[in-house]
Length: 428
Image (cartoon, rainbow, N blue to C red; front, top):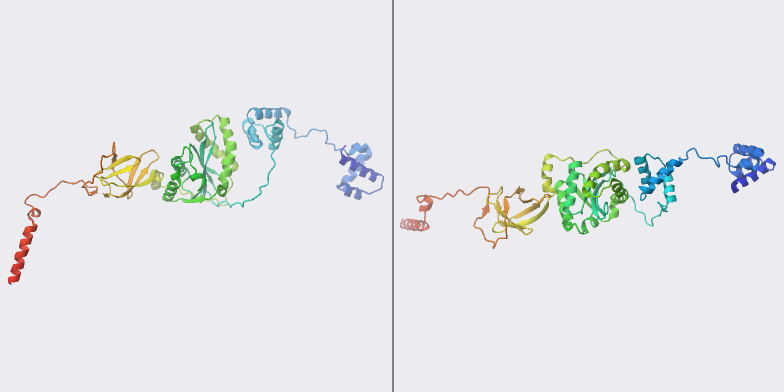
């Protein structure tokens, strides 16, 4: 018997001896008078053993089958050895139809040495939570995370998370988060979801840290700002990672869950990983997304004109000046302009060199693309071509004949005529 049960027996024994009444005994034990009567009847009939709880020693009706426990332990040891208890519980049900409470799985994993209990730490400083946006598509949090997602080499997971719902709206693996990778990401986002109202990104850590593969990272924020302004999307820059905590916590979750999903699916290449994301993201959103305050979708669907401009919007743009010989130097190449152009071109005009994601270079002047060809080598010397302007008209080569009035006109004759007229006027 336990100490508690022995103490109860002493009180019930006093009650049987009529030294106290039922009300006093109920107060001392902390039960109802009705229950005191039950305890007294058992003590009279069975003695002290009557106060032992009758469920002691009996198996619970909800006790798991030993075979189920053994099977769960087998899968935990062979397959889910690096999983957390919650994630392991989900996978046991999803892949093996073994339904066990996550706390039971936690105890099993602790007993097997697969999980170490961690005390919940209280933070020294608490940050106030920023309220979620009201509508889906009102603000997208965007960032990239370098991690060993699959294999031994780090790759970058570019991710956008809707602030109102917590949904992953788009995800894509790339080698870095440079200009081309980010532009390719948002091109795919726009085609799939439309234009969001605003994008929230980390000004300092994401776009100011140089990665060994992101050689164009220094120019990313400028190019990205220009592209979003051109597409009509508001860009909001955070001054610390904590400001966009939702996507930071999302990466923490994915670095635990997604890495293990890749291992189970035997994924070890970027192409397979991007294909896997297409099926994984909807399942992830179904489990973790929340319902927004309002049901309106603020994404603006792409019209035909915007779709046609996407290659230009997501191009790397730089300004250059036209030389006197109507050549343009850009990235150690020389581009010679044709005589015929869709717009009037002058020497020293400023043009925009647009590098498309497929590697094509276009020369933009006043929203018109100029005709050119690439010179095989650097010109020996820049010459000042007498042609003052390039237009959309071909010179016709016409010259006035010898008997044309223009050719008969002479400054000398004109001067003589003027002098004779002056003399005649003076004599009058």
